[in-house]
Image (tube, rainbow, N blue to C red; front, top):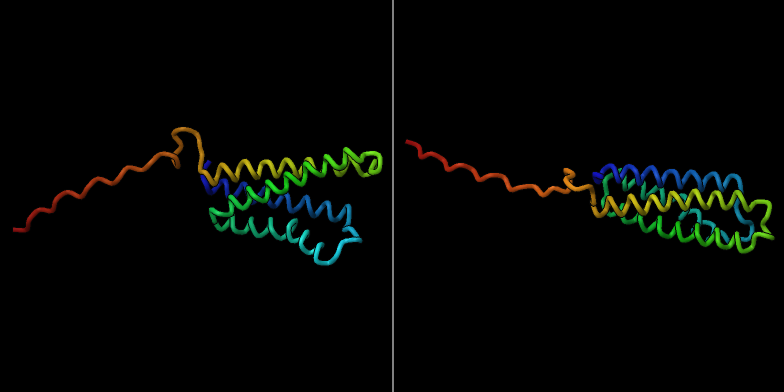
Length: 149
């Protein structure tokens, strides 16, 4: 996979995560018991960081691929812990349980894809014989110049 297509795929995945977070915010609302600083940090992570990383990815920054991998790893860990907590306390959250598990499953899938494509793009791993993986040969030397008579 060429590096630029990995950049575009990662930007689309980050946009999808941003949109899912927006849908969750609209449908579930915000927690009333959180402090302003806590809410700003969480919303910065959910909304600001994917947009910022996506912008750098579209600009072609190679380091943003690894930033996306790190973002996806943290997100996947949060998704797994959310599902485990929801399933272990299922009796208290029966009404909204299914929606939260589906949302965590979707974001977990997107985070996993973010890790996969970001790592692959950062390491520039491709199928054998791909154009980007083949080392370039040195150009042939210039022929000697003829002496002027």
